[in-house]
Image 1: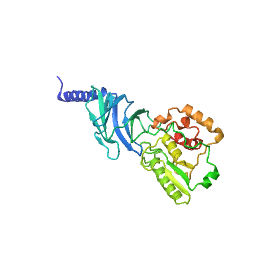
Image 2 (image 1 turned 30 degrees about the vertical axis):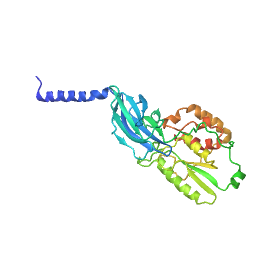
Image 3 (image 1 turned 45 degrees about the vertical axis):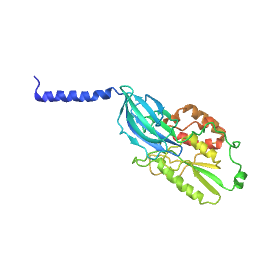
Image 4 (image 1 turned 135 degrees about the horizontal axis):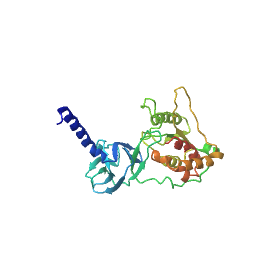
Length: 313
């Protein structure tokens, strides 16, 4: 016969085992949601415990995006109300089509063509598996196939710059949104915030200079993919593109700034070698893009933006 103490021990073990059974049936878990509205689209990042096994479809009357995730349980809190997006209202759960599937419903303000893709963990362990949902605010801009309005040249002729009424400089703060860039020791300081602050101050100083006008690729905390950065500079016919980043280092002693310039003789070789070795590098953070493959004529833009790919923008 079991003593009272032994009975309690067995009962505790059985209860714990029974509590674990439901979790053993699920291969994945939704850890959190991150919503990043930007001027062009609203991005939803779903942080997962492992690679997503999902399917999706759209419904109308009202407009909704439905995502079914197999063998998945929910750790994040639902519903998620979104107030600052022109296309997304709410993320909620719904009755699953079958046991073991978790159904997410994205209530939309209008019909949009969503783009969904998976992201693998980042090399440094900053992010794990993710499912990304991009909801465009309007018609998608075909940045990869866009043709320059004028014949592309390696650099603008100096006489053309001198004759221009204004010199337009596009300032590109790196990273943004779900991509924080380098993270400070306290884990409260992010590169994306530092470079945005620097870019704003730089723009203010340049705008105060007669004959110079600036535009910024992003003005808030949201992600802009590389293709869009390239298109933005091209569409504005910029004379100069300045990409602002903050280098990470192991010591606080270094001061000053660094400027990265590609040797034009070596550019083709270096770019080709880098692209060959890092075909899927842009997938890690969701949207660095393939500007160097599809926009090779825009050498002035390509060479300036190459550092974005090296730093995982």
